[in-house]
Amino acid sequence: MAFGWIDDQAELRRLAGLVRTLRPRPADSPLLDLASNDYLGLAHHPEVVEGAAVAARTWGGGSTGSRLVTGTTELHAQLERELAEFTGFEAALVFSSGYAANLAAVTTLAPHGSLIVSDAGNHASLIDGCRLARGATQVVGHADPDGVRKALRTHDGPAVVVSDSVFSVDGDAAPVGALAEASREFGAGLLLDDAHGLGVLGEGGRGAPHAAGLAGAEDVVVTVTLSKSLGSQGGAVLGPARVIDHLVNAARTFIFDTGLAPAAAGAALAALTLLRREPERAARARAVASELYTRFTAAGLEAVRPDAAVVSVRAPSPEAAVQWAADCRTAGLAVGCFRPPSVPDGISRLRLTARADLSGAEIERAVRVIGETRP
Ligand SMILES: Cc1ncc(COP(=O)(O)O)c(C=O)c1O
Picture 1 (cartoon, helix red, strand yellow):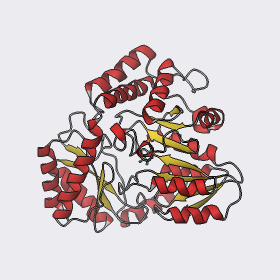
Picture 2 (cartoon, protein in one colour; picture 1 turned 45 degrees about the horizontal axis):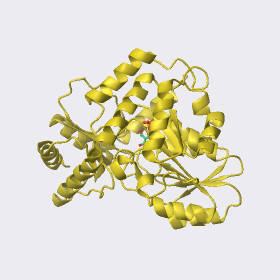
Picture 3 (spheres, helix red, strand yellow; picture 1 turned 180 degrees about the vertical axis):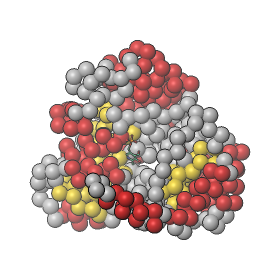
Picture 4 (cartoon, protein in one colour; picture 1 turned 135 degrees about the horizontal axis):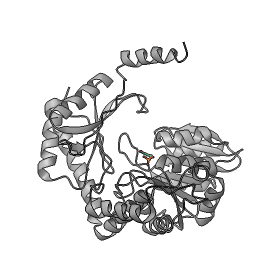
């Protein structure tokens, strides 16, 4: 039977406790949300929602075409100027998602004959970029600048070192300064995915590269998503103008994809304006993460010290993680549940996000529920 093999795979997934299901979320969900990536609590902020609404009324429901045909509006150009200005890079290019931005950056910066040096804990979209690139990939240990040096030493030709700046599963930060040093020793470029750093790390949320003094460097390229701290949707690549021009001409996920919806661009612009006005939101998200970590470890839970707004708590098995998350939900708390194959090391966890807008009482409730439902 056509597709009959799917049933065999489904059975294997079921036996391993790895079945995934969709659970549509109602608009008025009563759950306390520690599962989303809305780190600054901006997705529902009236100014962000209004930014989306005005953009949709002005420019329409969709961007109507590829960025190179009709899909570039003045709003897209304004968003690109704002993103570049805010993060300290010369230029920016907006994509329909962070995933598309990562595919674009990795594939266009790793031509035939080049080497990509990729951290073992990198996000799936960077890994897929490596798979699609013409260059060869060498995976190195997690957060290992000496491993990067060793890989670069063996290669003659263009090279790019690729790393998340904050890892999405455990929330630990990459040694970005040391990675830049290692890359520079060998004349390689550095590509950082700052999906979890933008809005949380650096001065007023300008991101991990800004915090490390790498903003605007001619050998550093950064990708971001608009769908986490900025409470919108979409992605961007930031870097030197010559790199951005190269992407416009060579990135397939830019050329063959419809431009970002105007509403998403308008929402992201409004969020950036808000963040400039209320820079303390970034520090608050970090402080909430730190408090959650301190409280969890004091309660004897095994958590990873957070470098940004992601707090990861270990579970004994995939089944226990799923049950733990379900019990939290029953008790009114939404948490993320990460299991293989979404975790690089096979360890299942609860993944909690420290939102800047959580109140003291909400933090209290989250800590209590997670402690009471622990396996
Ligand atoms: C590290 C990282 N990079 C890229 C992405 C993809 O961004 P987007 O959701 O905008 O496609 C995500 C998550 O979604 C992520 O966690």
